[in-house]
Length: 393
Image (tube, rainbow, N blue to C red; front, side, top):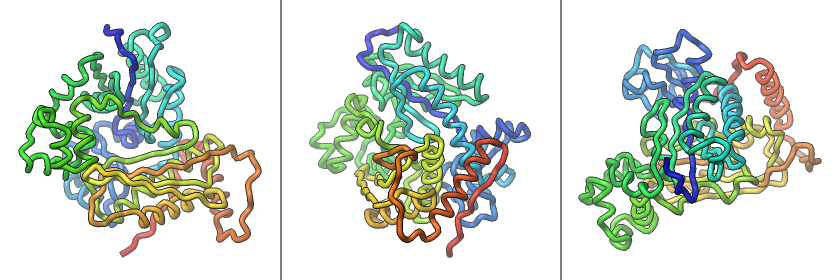
């Protein structure tokens, strides 16, 4: 086993997470196509997660439920219990924290674990990864896929290499060799539009990118995407995710399988992320007055916008409305989106006295109701309560 890592990261991906939780909790769903996000009659709903059985029909995340129903008419369609999924995620993240003091949760269903220097405790990085997989399976009944590498970027790609329930190890020094063995479509971060631009420019393999100078790539694809492509095929050795705000913020992001332009789809994803983050804040008894939105476009350019209010974020509706307002301020509607992210910054304990607002507009009542639902579902995970998004024509 290679022990020459300066750094070693595990990227852990919870396999088809929401659908897998439903299949675990409902044995009659196992082996069947399960689609989370809405019912076929929910005109504007979008797919949040599809089980691997459903993916065989071409169903994928961010797809309109109506389209999924046409592709997979015999699927099991569920609106989803995102609070319950958040609770299960919290249990799994607690397992990760037992293996390293440095766990970076990227979203409800994925995390990086820095296991540098833990060989004397857990064995080799692969042995540590297998122990994590075994514990998640034995304690939750769910499977995870793990990528092991010396860079976060390569570990991220490796985790998706043998899904579901996979484990892929890239030895130190083999990062570039691994990247050059990949087909273009496996280049994480290069979405549908970028793939089209690569093909139209005559690029067919990752080796074709590797042969070009960074200046030429910037000329063809622009400053941001050109730099990204040049570094990506070399393993993105200096790319680390979210280090700067690890202990001061809580964030979640969604990378779409296909570039998205439809505002309703984007809004639906922002609503789900807002809900997930609020449940995590409830669990950890935290509050915040600051939120931010990150938008990554199809050309890989990334923009963000932040806002700090005089009063705390009251509930998931409040966070959603703040984020939608920020999104509309920053969004360039001439571009498609490949990633949307939300974070809450400068987190504080709810035990610290907070400034009261003169005008409440019903937020305090909504917050109490939401907290009551959280408490009820915490005591009884089988309880499934949801709040529907109003349909708009």
